[in-house]
Length: 515
View 1: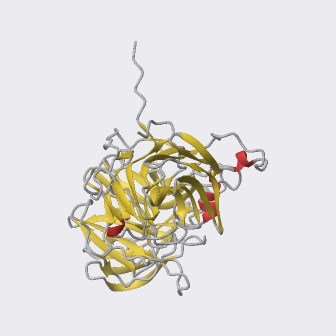
View 2: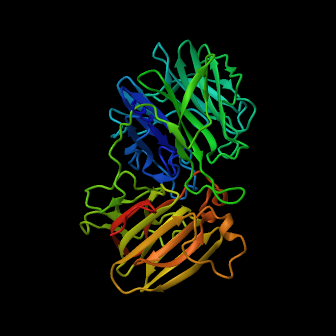
C-alpha cells in the first residue's frame, strides 16, 4: 500500500504581524532582509532577517541614534520616517528613506544589517518614498513619489550619487500611474531586458492597489501593464484588505515573491483595523513579461522547506545590558529617562512629562502583535505615577495607572479624558494586565447601547493582580477612529517620579504568560 504524499508546507499571513507597514526586502545569498516604516517612533526602521521569507526575527534598527533620527519634540503622530527601501550593493547594505519631520530624503549604509548604520547622507530630492537601483554601468537611480503641489505629481526618477548626496540627472517625470489617487511607493528593478516600476495607488486605505509599468531604461518611456492593477482587494469581502505598497524579491531558484502591507479589519461596517498595517507575503507569477499576483490568502503554500529562526521571547526580564531592539518610544528616549542598571533586573523609568496626552512623556513599548493578546507587567510604582498603556497616539490611548495607593483605568478618546474604573491597591509591586479579545470577558452593563457587542473589532480588558477591573470597546483605538498610519503599541510609562518594572510579557491571549 502506497503511503500518502506529505502535504507541502504552508504559512500563515501576515508573516510579520502588528504595526510593520511599507515593507521592503532584499536577498543576499540565501538570507533575506526586510525593513519597515516607523513614523514618529524611536529607534526607527526595524530590520528583520529570514532564511525562507516566512519566519522573520528583528535583528536591530537602522536608526538607533539621535544623530540619525532627528525628530522635533512636537512632531505629529504618523509623521517622521516614511517608506524605507533596503538594497545590497558592492558588499554594503543601503537604506534610503524620508524623514518627513526633518530634512527629507537620505541614505544610510552598513556592512552588516544589524549595524552599526552610518549617519544620514541627505539628498536634495523632493517628495517621499525613495528607492535605489543600480544599472549595469554602476549608475545609481532613485525613483520617488512626487511632492504634493508639484508641477508633476506622480513617480519621478533621478540619477544620484548616494554617497555624496548629489542629484546627477533629473528628476525626470516617469509615470503618473493608472489615474488613481496617490501614485507612490515606487520600486525600480532590472529584470531581463526590461526595467520595471512597481508602485502603489489608490491611497493606503481600502482602495489600495499595486500597479506596474516597464521601460527599456530608467529614463523611460514607461508602458503600463495591460492588466493593471496587478493586485487589489478593494470592494471585496476578503478578510485581508488594503493590499499595496509592495516590493519584489527573488529566491535562489529563480522564483519571485512579493512582500506588501495589508490590514485585517473586524467589526461592523466600516470595519476597524487595530494592529495597523502589517507585512504579508504572496507568490508572483510572470505572464507575457508582466508580474501577476493575488489574491493574498490568509494561508499560502510556502516558498520551500521551512527554515525557522529562533523566535524572539515574549517575556523580557530586563536582565540584558541593553534594551531589546523591539522596544520603541514616541519621538525620542532621553538617556536620563530610563535605566537597566539603576536597579539591576528592573527597567527604571523616570518621568519626563506629566501626561501621555502630550509629547514628551516617558513611554517604552512594543507593537501589539496579536489580535487576541495578553500583556502583563510587574510594576513597583514607589511614590510615583506609572502604569501600562495601549496607545495609538496622544489623543487615543487607554491607561492602567497606579498612583497614590490606587489603580485606575483612564480612557483618552479625542478631546475626552475619563477615569472609568478604579480601586485601592496596597503599597509595593502590583501586577497589571491588558488583554484584547474578540469576545466579551465581562458581562455587558445594562446601560450599554444596544448592538455594542456587534460593532467592536475587539474588547480591551484591564486586570490588577489577576482580578478584572474594566473592559472597553476597542474601536476607539483603531486607525478608522484615530486616523494616521500607525497601529497599537502597548507599553510601560511614568508620568510622575520614578517607577520600576521587573518584567514585561506580551503574547497571544491563549498562551501562558505572566509570572
